[in-house]
Length: 56
Picture (spheres, one colour):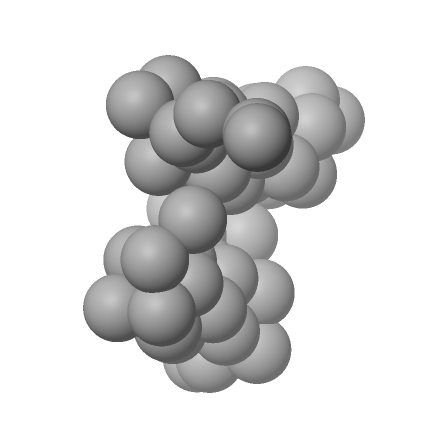
């Protein structure tokens, strides 16, 4: 993963889990599966950034 992609994933993860957006989303849709969907989205984003990577 390139350094720029790593920083982008880190910032999206911080926004997704440590910002007031979490409280706002919990107030709108307090479904039990929301935290699992947020983690799945972050894992999917990491997987998308790793698609073109090749190990030597």
